[in-house]
Image (cartoon, rainbow, N blue to C red; front, side):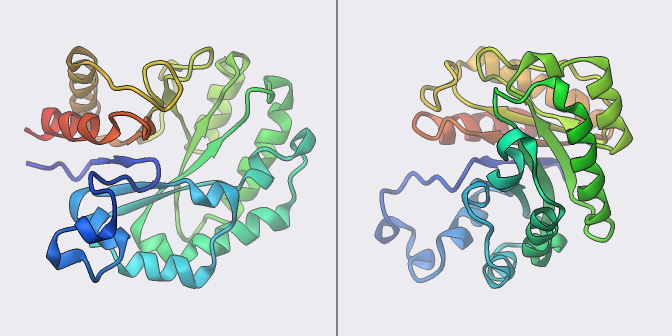
Length: 249
């Protein structure tokens, strides 16, 4: 039985079918998102990292999925990857306004930072989280922080995350994950980039079983768990299906 605390999908929409004409007949005249949402209960939207989506587009997406579906949006790169981490408040407001139509299907706001961003920028990160919080009072998106440099896995970062109720992403990119779980966020965010961190390949049964056991433990403690497979050039779908079965039975 599916748990209301477990949300799992892929990083960007991935299908077994090579094109829409191969979709089941009931979905051939519907959107790709509608079909995706019939199979999975969450999506990590990666396109929002490249370009802020249009408000009308997000509103349409929100109407194409069922009530139990959850969107996670990856924060725009002009913010997370800004030169010298010098983002603007207006860019943050613009992004939050763009995704607002999906707030009734809200999952996470994923902040993925580059390997070049190190902990000496923690004051700027604090400012970023402060501005996001000011623009997130109504919608209440969960905030997930994905670091790609090991310097971030330290007490000041954990304290900052706790202050804003954010979770630190548990991921497996070589040289920068997995992070220890030290925050008191009410949710867990897992991101699988592929065994070698190159978005390819697949995970063995033993690894999926280990994570399924951890996920059940977290859910038994009342935590929501978001899981996204980013090994989209490999076995993202079979890995997702297997993990979901191991968790839900």
